[in-house]
Length: 189
Image 1 (tube, rainbow, N blue to C red):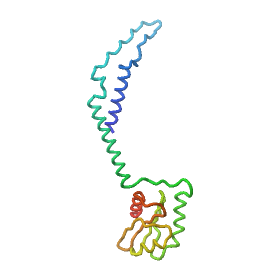
Image 2: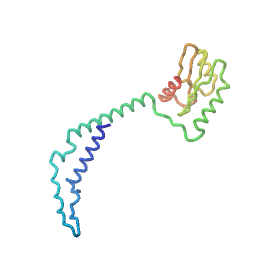
Image 3: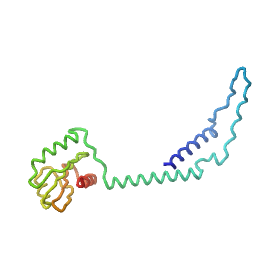
């Protein structure tokens, strides 16, 4: 953070210096009228900046800081790309139709009565589209049979435990990197 502040201050100083000295934006010193008082002579024009000070972009400290800022910017973009590759792009909830909370309640009411013995409804995630529904099963070998008996669900991921299994299924929507990532997270809840 400190290099960025130094860079911003240095560049601001360079721009101001360049504007005042090279472009002629330095305010002209006008004599000040002091009626009844002795006049103070105007301040002499400032001496032109030395050649080294006028070449702000070639200042080694600023050049090094600018280089570091470019490197950090590149690293940030690469990290963001890696996150997107791993997590996928978010799928916002549609603005039309029921809210995510309404859809979550609707899915719970729809699927809870259809579950066979030994299967419990787990968390439902409708933070993004498509919704994800998790199931806790006493017998992990029944995952495919249970999901086949429930309409509109597609298996996304399974986690086997010492006794039973947890499964996450998509309610509609396409299987993609984002739904895979969300499914793994829901499985860990």
